[in-house]
Amino acid sequence: MIYETSEAWRQAKTRQVLLFGMSGLGKTHVSNMLRAEGGWFHYSVDYRIGTRYMGEFIADNFKREAMKVPLLRELLRTDSVFIASNITFDNLAPLSTYLGKPGARDKGGLPFDEYMNRQAQHREAEISALLDTPRFIDRAAQLYGYADFVCDSGGSICEVVDPEDREDPVLSALSSHLLLVWIEGSDAHTAELVRRFDRAPKPMYYQPEFLHAAWADYLAQTGLTEDSVDPDAFVRWTYARALAHRQPRYAAMARNWGVRVTAEEVAALRSPEDFVELIARAIDSAPARR
Image (cartoon, rainbow, N blue to C red):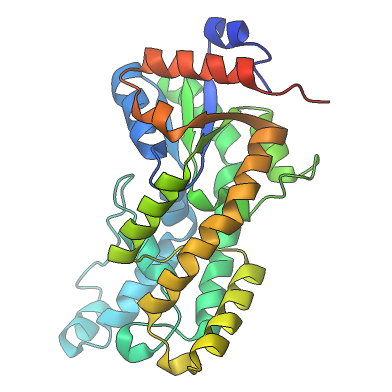
């Protein structure tokens, strides 16, 4: 870790952290607080994915749908209208909408092969956005004068790294510049996330091996064909399994590459100073690494 002791963290002239864990446990909330009240630079991996790396895919998908409308088709062909996504740190809907869900077209689903193609695009984009982080640390300091930096990673970071590989290129690059902090949820948090997702299912990125297995199992259990699957039903069915799949991967990232804090501790934070003290305690509690 780049801060070997809690005192080194407290006394550091610059503090650089990456928050990771399940979506919905406070990564963006804490990042917004640090930016607004503590003067930290907030780097959102999902925002970077949706703008720099997948922005063209997203806009082209909007245009593809608009071309089905005669009036918009003519306006687009004559460059009379401009279509773009209005993605923000707090509204990542354009990215989620593009990723989509597999299943029946008349219910908004995608053919499974196209769905997997978009998943592959996201994987490549996420790795690139994560590897951009060190450059943004330098940019934040040199261009804008920020001393402290928080990277708000996506929930799928654990899907694009191997936390047990001491030479994993993404984790090696990140850990040499930032302290990796896992926001760990409890069983109660997991249950609430599942309930929340059930009310409003949204597309997510998963490892291809996991998705292929989940898709095959779902078709076998339901007896449905690809073009008769309810897309929302499939992603609901998949979500709880995905959380169970991710939890040990997050734990390995914290054990081998960073520290952990609990979602309850994060929810209790009221200021950037509270955050600094929470991380100091997490460093003291981290197991010694060989």
